[in-house]
Length: 339
Image (cartoon, rainbow, N blue to C red; front, side):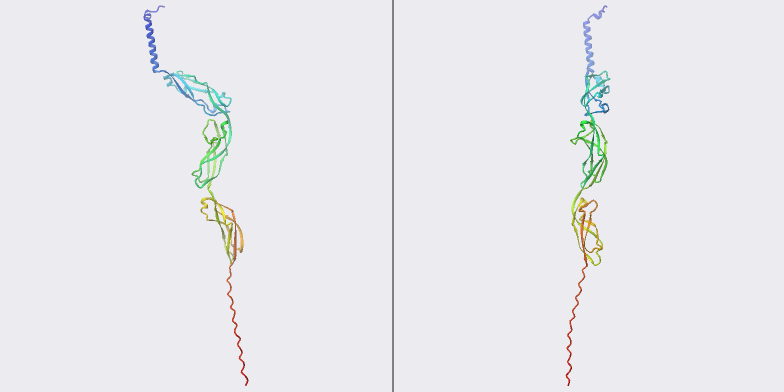
């Protein structure tokens, strides 16, 4: 086959011109849309349902950092939905830090994955449960003059399920603020978990459940208790019998110790007893009676001995009878002499 002369003529010059034109075209194309690389962050599927039932993740698996290659236009138009990450969680057979196989597929042919990883590191622990008592934590106490006298939770314990080694030292609490409460509290409160250092554990990945998640807290609030000594004043009724009078009444002991809210004790100058009737009493008698403080106050001792003395009324002394003065016996007059 004979090559036409116009092709053979100056062929070196024509070849050079073609090369220059090709280089120029490539330069123009790549100047406007050059090849580039890009790094993207991709999440790792790690739902509890995908992991074998006897294991649980101790900490979340961090995102994968993938390197992509392509021209600027392709990389700019790339969407993350083109990537699919598959982790072979079912291959895990033991707890601890393990390398789990994974695969990554890319549905965008204009972009290439550059050295994608084939495994991912994960920290897994055996799934376990523990029963924890529920403590009521009063974050702020009641107002001045009031105290909590008893606290209880129903149920008194909860079951916590999660990573075996993370359950050690856990505490279950319910928190309540009593700064404005002067009456008893009964409320359903959420159960909170704290570690051995007293730091709240908030939604950790290794925790799979707390059952129940709320408990009924009952807190009894009462006035502050204090004590003071107080005189005992016996209460009496009736009157001594006619012709008798009350001359003495004594109490043993004369004072008792009262205990109760400060505001009640401040209003008490003395404390009374159960009522003693004076009807029919004569002479000296003793009665053991109960001390009767107002509601909310107790007395120690709770009873005292009251001694009552009733005597006859004193009669006025009779006026002395005057002794009659004897009159002198008259001297008889002698008869006259006989002549």
